Length: 194
Length: 424
Image (cartoon, rainbow over the protein chains, first blue to last red):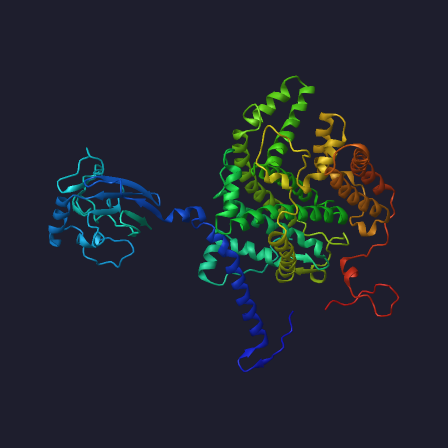
């Protein structure tokens, strides 16, 4: 049905060029058309505005703890006593179940020393994602009357995971230390998380 | 007309598949389907409609990921989508403009059927399935518009559902009971919105099924063509659907998509009513309650009849009369091309529908009301008087013997006479 005109200049004919050019243009057009369909599923502007929060730490006395909500997750903030800091620092790394510091945004393989899990000069402040790394329950230990477990940190009532005063897993089924979210001090007692 | 392909599975896998689910054979049949060579671009609207159905389904499902069908936050959820979500405005405008163009295309498709007699035997069932599609589209569009929960959405639902209370004049209390049942309460409120959302999501999938039947029913006799004369010689008078009409349809879809893009990106709210950007207020009725443009002719008919029940019956009758056209039209000749008398009435009907459309947007009083009544009268007269009578008394103009005679090159001797020439 179609007449063929052989118009080969070298190895690529005019017809080949048209086919390839049309195909490339169509592919670009299809990608441009599909992209909004995919992008609309991404968090929208109002969700993204929740990406960072600011917390004022001044009301939190030594020995006290608060929980704030960041990106839908509970964040444990504890103003640790000198004893709690000392216990955390003096634990040898070999005793830890998870040797990784679990700092979000930092390269993996960072050793789980207390220094790595706090900010320099602000070691009394422990700020971490309060979700048990086993199956996702929220461990006890924030309120004064809570069970803190044998390591003085947190205790997960679901399956018995026990965390120390630096939020590191010591005993129980949880595989990893509780994560440290990305945060920075914007003032002496103010932080911005995320 | 089916099984037109010479499909032979070439590999072991395709042979295995063919004996279990002959889907490749089925698709090959579609691609090879013999289509009359002389169909014009009005025949591309089937494909255009399919394109719009797919667009509406995609954009609708995506909108449902962001929309909240609760009367307290529905309006806000749409505004949030428009402002906060990535390309949310694009999804919303696509769906909104897509609905309008869907109806634009369906009306052209319908009038093509009227002009060329595509509803006549043996395509009566095909035509009726098409009218069923139109009814489903009307229901879907009405429900979709209500989901915005703007002033017009709310009051359109109130007005149209209140129509059922006209049944009170047949049996006291019946209409009121039905209306409360439809509302799920004593007025249009959250329960109504929830069920409208569920139905609006569901009906399009029923529509897909009816469209499948529509295409199946088409593939039994094959497509009609502008001469109205059936194909006699498949070799000379038809071409395989692919590549000739796949490409022609793609081009037509591309032109439509251009119009679509212009509306969506430059004037997305042109076809809409600004009153619907006001959140629904049950305590305040907008000064003019008007439906979207594609419902205006039916709205004009509804308001033209002085009695409430009469208006409701007339409005539904205006749609359902379409089902009976294959039997109302008595002409032995299919295509209006060869019907010199009926042709005038066809254009009169088109003008009538456009006039009713305009009058539907005007307050029903004074000259506008009188005109609406006259045009409503002609609308029904066309189907119940013109179609039966003209077909019987009309003498058709000379018709070609076959399709081949029609599209052959006219000779070069300028005699105006058509001489058959050998096929290429």
